[in-house]
Length: 107
Length: 117
Image (cartoon, rainbow over all chains, first blue to last red; front, top):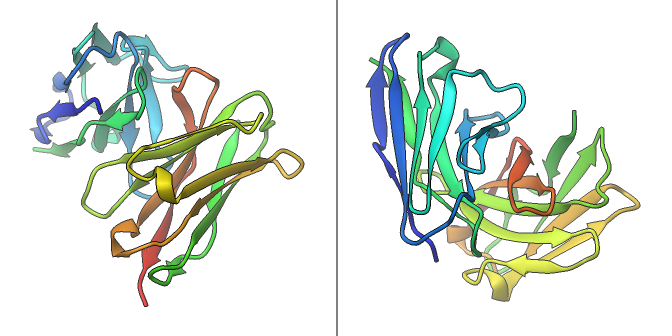
């Protein structure tokens, strides 16, 4: 299985901060990576697909980069609605696998 | 906007079969692929498997021996059966859509299933 290592597991930040979350794959997943936001009780919301493509309707403060084994999600200016948990997931290879999540909390 | 809604018993006894249904609304189930994902409390997300509307399936090897997924296009629903459940199968279960590229562009809100006697 492709093991996805996400860091940090928790991130404390303030509104307006620029934050970066990293996801590393144990083997090459090309660009088959998605970032999504999850708030308990809600449907997970895809933000970035194919590593760097912004999903329709997602604010432009979200961006993704990387390919192969190393990927990043950046939020350029953190907004109040952004405090939640973020996951990466590779969809290049079966079985599909997920990172452990990054909880973004208010500092 | 396509909507996915999971339904099924919230409590299942050990050794029995967990059965969940995902209803697709405001869109067609045809020509797409449908997945189940779960998350035990305090643990990571795990992909369970995928079914296409042609009936072909792919399962996570870790669960393959216990999983069956199917689609009912007449009802715009797809389903998950997981047999011989134990407490380790207690989790939030989510259904998702992919358009054939394995990218989950739509998710349900999830449903909690507890395995307990």
